[in-house]
Every structure is written in C-alpha cells, then in structure tokens.
Amino acid sequence: MATWSSRLVQQVQQVQSQEFRQYLMRQNIKASFSYILFANWGLPLAAIADSRKEPEIISPKMTIAMCIYSAMFARFAWMVIPRNRLLLACHLTNESVQLFQGKEKKLMEEIKNKENTENKENKENKENNKENKE
View 1 (cartoon, one colour):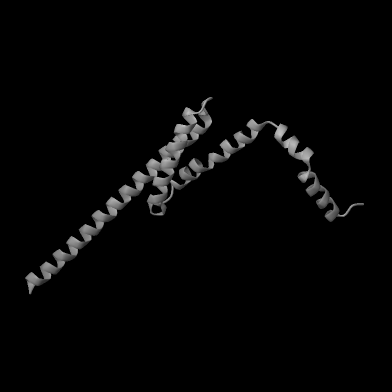
View 2 (cartoon, helix red, strand yellow):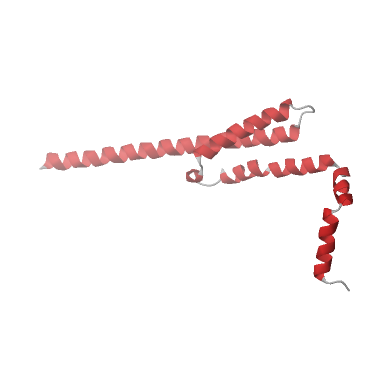
C-alpha cells in the first residue's frame, strides 16, 4: 500500500510529464477561453452587488479606471473576428453599472456639499441673530 507522500510524488511527476502537457494542449482550447469569459463576469456582478450599498464606498478613481477598461475591451470584443458577443455583453454590462455608480457618487457628493453650505449659512444666521439681539 502506497503512502500519501508517494502518491503525491506520482501526481507531481504525472503533471510534469510531456504526455500530460500534450493532453492539456489537445483538449478543447475554446473551453478554457469560455472559463475565462465566465470568470470575467465577476466584475459586473461585483459592481451590481456594490450598487446596492452606500455610495460612500465607491471609489471615483476605480470607477473611472473600470469605465475605461470596459470600454476598451468592449471595443476589442466587437472588433475581433469572429465577434465575441459574450465578452461584449460582459463589458457593456460592466460599463453601464460603473457609469451608474459614478452618477450615484456624484449625486451623493452634491447632496453633501449642499448640506454643508446650508449648515454654514444656518450657523452664520444664528451668529448674526445673536449679535443683533445684543
């Protein structure tokens, strides 16, 4: 009966063998690309999940970077022959969600700025009222 260490050594030797590498290369290369495409859907799915959270967690720099990234790869997916519609859909979805998050962040900042100016005006008015009463 072989021990676990000898089995491990056998597995490592099998992975390092030329036959195993040829086997991997003969396998459906398109399947590995499809795994990459499905893994790529993690970006828009994470962005969709984040869109339900508070806008304070949104990073404007990252949102801009993701918009540029998605726009570039959406163009690539459209221009490559044959067209990669799954990748195109992924990046267009991500682009839409990132633009939505950017808009939410901007609206939140505008509301905060408006509240800050109103608070300053209220404080100034209170101070002026106190001075006028004296």
